[in-house]
Length: 163
Image: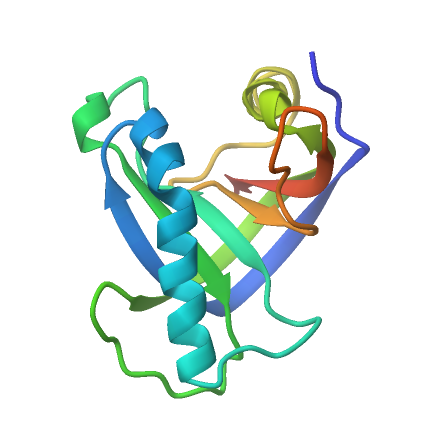
C-alpha cells in the first residue's frame, strides 16, 4: 500500500476556486483532463487570476464511485484563486469555495499510485482512526505538476473532509 509522507489536519475557510466539471467515468475523465485543465488555465490567464507561487491546482471528486454509476460521476478540475478577486463565470468555468476541516495526506506519487494513496487515506487513516467523515467533497491538491508518465513522481496532497 502507498504510504503518505505524513498526515496533517487543515481548516479551509471559504477558499475561492474556479472549476470546470466533467461528467463520466474516471477513465474518460483522465482522457479529457489535460484539455479541461488547459481551458481552466486559459480562463485564469485571460482574467489575470494567476499569482505565481500562490494558486494551487486541484481535482475534486464530487461523487462516490461505489454509489454513482460511472456515466454519471462528476469530477472537477479546479484552481484556487484569491478570495478578494472578482470573477465572472464564463463558458464552462464556474466559481465556488471550499470550507471546513480536512485530513490531509501528503504523498509523493507516481501515476499508478494514486488509487492506492486514496485507499490508504480512507481504509487505513479515516476508517481505522479517530476522525469522523464529513459530508463534503474530497480532492487532490497538486503541490508539484502531476506525473506525465509512469516513472515520474510528484507531490500531491489528498484532502479528506472530516468533522
